[in-house]
Amino acid sequence: MRAKSLASCYNRDHRFMVHARGPGTENKKINSVEKKLLQSEQENFRLKALLKEKEEMLVASLCKGEQLHESEEKFRKLFEKHSAVMLVIDPDTANIVDANRAASSFYGWSMLCLSSSPLGWFCT
Image (cartoon, rainbow, N blue to C red; front, top):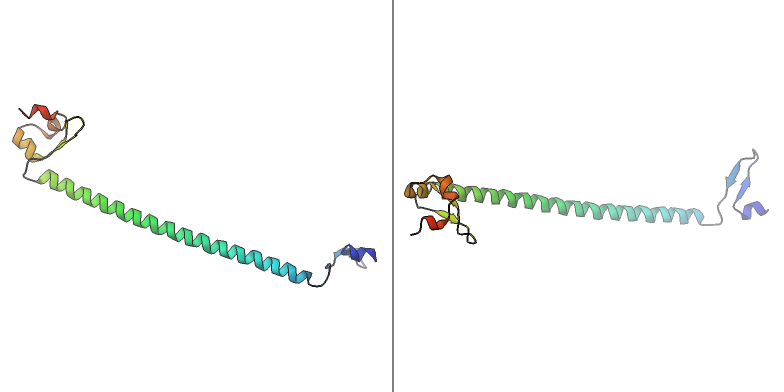
């Protein structure tokens, strides 16, 4: 029977049927499926771990961003409300970048005018 050696034959109703090609073929198929399932589960576990790591990094980054923002706010309030004259000067151009209220009061200029002036105007 040559048809069985080709792993196929017709049943009585003339429907095509495929037969196993030898003992253990089903076990090989099951092992192959189990192997693929295991690989898939391992990949899924790896991706979940990577996602969790990225999530933790994002949360840490957001926390650092919030801390930086809070620190900048605190410094800004300290700078603006302090009674000492404070000027922020660009070292490359020697222009005043920012000034606080005390500087505005001391020099008699608005903070806007101070912030756009060269430092040389005030140093004689």
